[in-house]
Image 1 (cartoon, rainbow, N blue to C red):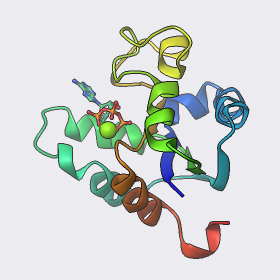
Image 2: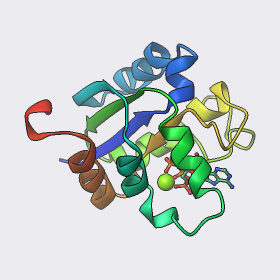
Image 3: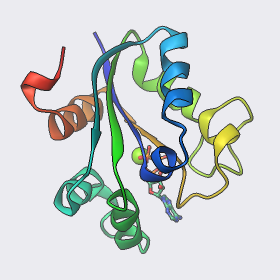
Image 4: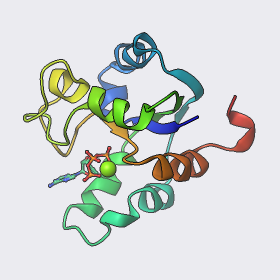
Length: 137
Ligand code: ATP
Ligand code: MG
């Protein structure tokens, strides 16, 4: 079955939104296969977002993701990649629909609370990047 890598970014953790966010995925019906609080080294943030390395905001993005602990989630279920992106909302929280995580809980693209994999291939790539074998159920 399909898996997605979902990550509550440092602003979401700092603002105390972890329970609120995880409960949305639980209520939707996806299975949690991995879950941890983690202080991400810069090299991992750089690897995770390597496709964006030529963007002007890339250094800021790496700083943001390493600015405090993140919550790493491996979610499983049919269509979980697209569905999680739908629950999360579009990149800019000001444009994200009310009812989505970003639409309800954020106001800045540079602090948009949460990440979700954009394809099943990237879901597997990112889960392998952020979790060790023994950390997954
Ligand atoms: P994510 O990959 O984190 O789930 P996304 O797929 O909606 O987000 P991407 O285009 O992959 O969006 O960008 C990755 C992240 O980089 C965004 O979530 C945001 O934190 C940051 N980002 C994207 N565009 C900008 C921008 N113009 N200015 C500042 N930060 C940006
Ligand atoms: Mg993305």
